[in-house]
Image (cartoon, rainbow, N blue to C red; front, top):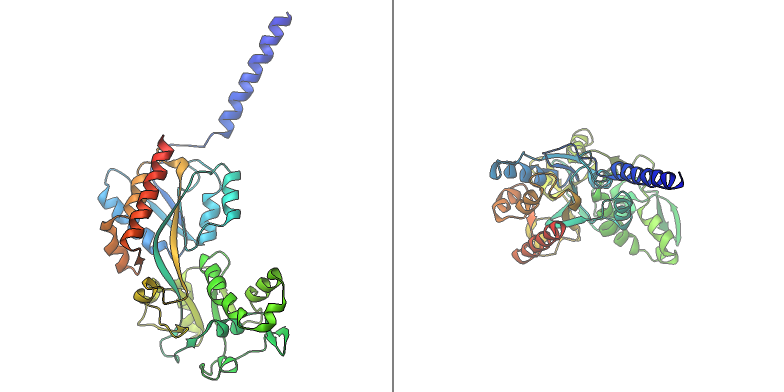
Length: 346
C-alpha cells in the first residue's frame, strides 16, 4: 500500500511537471507569415524590404509590416515567444536596458540587433514660411517648460521665435513634437534638447537627474503639440498651422520637399551626404531586432533579416531616403547576423 502511494505521488509530480511545461511552452499555431512592427521612420524601409523579399523568395509569404512607434514595437516584441507575438521590431534608436530586461522576464532572451542604415531628424515648416537657422539652444528655449533667466529657472515666457534670437523668423512658436512612443523623441532629447540646455550656466548648478528632467520636460501652454501618429499626421497639421515647425525623418522630407522648407541646425542643412560624413548633428542609426527564438519556427525569418542587408536592396532603400551603411559596416552587420542565426540552430 505504501509503495503504491509513493508511485501515485511520483506519477502526480510527473503529470504536474508535464502540465507546467505545456503551459510555459511557446504558443505556436503554425503561423507562416513574418510579423513586423515598430518605428514610423523605419516603416517605409521595412515595407520595401518586405515587398522585395516577397518577390525574391516566392516560397515564403510576404511579411506583414505595421507601425506603432519604436517603443510600441518593442513592447509587442517583448511580450513573449510564440505565434501570437511579433518576430521583428523596427526602431529608430537602440533598445534600452529596461526593454531588454522586460524581454528577458517574458522569455525573450535571444535578441538579434541589426543596424541597417542611417537617418537624420529634420525640422521643417510650410514651404511658404521663412527659413529657420536653428541652434540647439534655440530649440531648447522654444520647447522647454522651464528656462533659465537671470540665474534662475522660470516658466517659459517665449511666445515668438524672434524673442529667442532676433535672427529667427518673427512668428509665433508652435512646435509639432513626436510623442513618447516614438524613438525620434529620445534622439531629439539626446542630440538637441540636452546640448541646447547645456549652453546655459544656470543648468550646471542642478544635479544630473534634475538637470535632465529640466532640459527635457516640455512646456504645456499650447506651444508644443505632441504627435502620436506618423509623419503624415505632422504634415497634415502643417497644412492648418503653416507657421508651425514640425519634426520629420530625412527620407520623409526628401519625398515631400515640394511642400516643406527645411531648417539648418548648427549651420548645416540635412542631406544624406552630411549624414554619411557625420557633419549633421541630429543624425542617428536605424535598427531592427529579430526574435532569435522564432528562427526555425517562422518560415523565411532568417532569409528576411539577411535580405534587408543585401546589396540588391541597397538601391530601393536609397531611393526611399535611407542613408546606407558603408560597405565595411554592412559586412560587419551581415556577419553578426549570420553568427547569431547559426548560434540559435546549434
